[in-house]
Length: 380
Image (cartoon, rainbow, N blue to C red):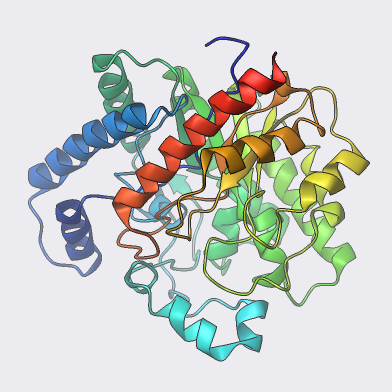
């Protein structure tokens, strides 16, 4: 890729085809499904979603998380230890203030199907092949279309501990480090396939107004510092330049007025090993924080991938707006240290109905066009 072009990517999940959604819903409901038919649908969908990303002009692509029912809860199919009760309704402090918004969020079909049983015994890897299979399919689909730049997202130890309650380990630290050691295989499988590993870390931001809402800020900061220590432990064998992490305040259409400011957490975020950090930069609660990071500064060895389009809205951002936003972020770090991204995934749970699937890819095309406009200006 030319060093005169700011590359674009996205955060991971993309809308799944209807036939795959129905098959995965059936699995979630305990309805028998032909395993070969399911695997065939996943592989076909990966090929289709890879092509759609390439057609949109996305530079660093993935498999759209086609094989996963949700960006975090999929781990229960790959790890043992999660045999407890499932949390039915997660607490979000902002939704408590607006009950009608809470009803709208809870009513999304994708969220209704999500299951996250608590940890009731020691965590071990039970399906090491799943991560390998994911990468074989992605690499094959990308190579068949002449595309080399790929990434694959994986749940961080911290976000797994956020969704799956701990009913076994003595302390949070013991729990999150057990998860880290179990997930190390998946992270290394992605890296060994030649892809960039993306660690999804909503615990570092969304956790403040959800699972950790009862903690004061100091205690919360200590909690996420432990989570990052566990993350660093899990990726100790992977070079920092092959790692990126997604900082997330939650991809749901809530008011988000209890979101923790990035200024309260960013010093701890910088201690994580991944070289590139994906931050929210398009939605109306965090679009201003480019100025915060400009004031606070970014470590010289870090790169930024701000979100420039919003995955919850059917508005297609104009390429000129994308270019203008990139221009602002170029005041935070040099253009050579920038990538362009999306605030969060377009379909973090199978069957999410927040956005028209075709609009999602049109938004990615606009993102790519905006990168070209900005690059011409910034590298002139």
